Image (cartoon, rainbow, N blue to C red):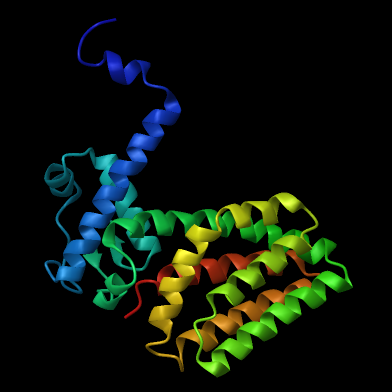
Length: 243
């Protein structure tokens, strides 16, 4: 077959999906940038899907994907028939710790972690022996010590999640976390640096979520452990944009 559509028809499905994801990331970052700069202020209606598609030279499904992720991040709210509106303007200080182009990829990492670690927490509640429970508790105590010392605690944060993954009794969960350590630390570093700007609220809130995960695992409540882990990672994703 010849003609302008032949390349897209012959393109492997995985490559099509990857290209779509990259385009969605670009639209996502563009809208975040406009919100940060104040071009779209809180409560203001965003341009229509058709207009955003034209501005970014992409299709409307690509724009919808970007808007869906912005809703998950708590930046945008949408009303059927009325369009999408800015819900929150993030703290520009986050750009002191993370370049704008990295935000979309980091949020995808949070999305993946919610699925991965939700399952590892569920299995940890089912399979953890007394030694594994003690390891998670010690990791929780290290995090508590970091809060009292006013330390960032990124390594301790990762250590808690790794202890939960190891308690699943399936090495592929811990191996996957270790393979993603750089990306995970990037998100934890950003969230905790911003959290130190309001230490009386942010870090204790995170620690309470960690404690909830630990207690569910210790009690052997697999469904609650999974739910608490997913909620924690979802909250961490949204906290990136809290001002």
